[in-house]
Length: 156
Image (cartoon, rainbow, N blue to C red; front, side):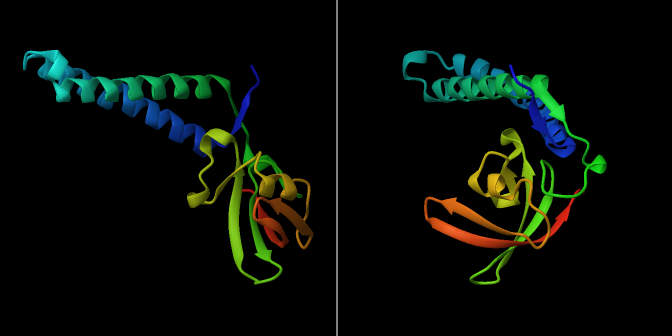
């Protein structure tokens, strides 16, 4: 399998979440299942079924995080500079509205657009990769084509 590029912050967040799931959430749901079993008939025991469903979600997320962590390729951003690459924090300005937005280009597992973490494979990130400050970029999205100017590029 291919390595998954990640920032050090993204790796740390995945590791913290994995430890939380293994040391707090998993034991709590096991305890909830045991308590629900004590209530008798499992066929009509909503607490038991809810706890089992929660256990399934926790176990699935643990497996997903273990896979991500095992394939993680942590990129040292302190060694990067210049044009837009993985890990860059890019401020862009919409050429029509002058509205500025700032994104960090990250790997898929750590992407979260609400937090300004842009998936490396997104149309916006693909348009920005390889560009320099003051370059104009064309981004084709499902909502139409937009034009942006790169205001700044930082590696922090």
